[in-house]
Amino acid sequence: MSVMDHDQQPRSGGMGRFLAIGAAAIAVLAAAYFGVTMMMTREAKPEPAPAARAEPAPAPPAATPAEPEKPAETPAARRPRPRKEEPPAPEPAAPPPAGPTLIVESDVPGASVFIDRKFVGTTPLRTTEVTGGPHQLNASVTGEEGLAQTIEIAGTGETAITLKFKDVRLDAAVAVVHKHGIGSCEGRLVATTDGLRYDTANKKDAFSIGFGQLESFEIDYLKKELKVKQKGGKSWNFTDKSDNADKLFVFHRDVTKAREKLAAQGK
Image (cartoon, rainbow, N blue to C red):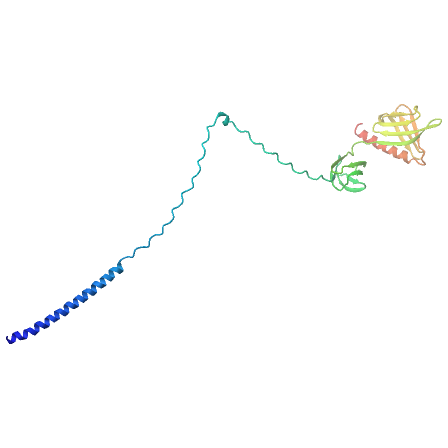
């Protein structure tokens, strides 16, 4: 063997070991690479999604009962049915009765009204300051004769009174003695709007005449004598048993006022 061949053998053996080590390293790297790749593949593989929870199926809707078929309308069924009468509504309770109320009217407004001498107002008047039962009413107004009368006020509700100042009222009477030429007779002299009347038991002296038939109607207070004379006829002289002529005077005054009012009204 030559020197050159001896030198080449060691070099061939070293190269082989180098190649063997290189191959082993490559194998290790390849195995490592393959392992890492497998791990990455397993990590990258998606996990299966959890199974969805099954929701209960909704219950089917309840079946609606079918409406019964309506029978065909007959002519009798088409007629309007009578309306059912509703029971009558109960009547409201009656209010309690109102207390006594006095209403006073007058043909001359502004008349002062007194009940049992207590002033209650002027006409036209409506007052509840009264009580039921009989009462004395007095009324007066300027230019007219006063009025006085007894009234009955109802215990409940309204009592209406109308005062007529312009009406002529006359109801007067006085006990008298009729003086004759010889002797006398007693009786009662009465005056109304119809005239004068003398009532006596002596029928020959009794008379009744209208105011239009009077020629004179005079009073002599000092002589205590009332003289009545008929137009174109008989005359009567009256007195009374009093000590004065007051009663004759009042009778004459009332009759004279009434005659004047009647004359103003053309009566």
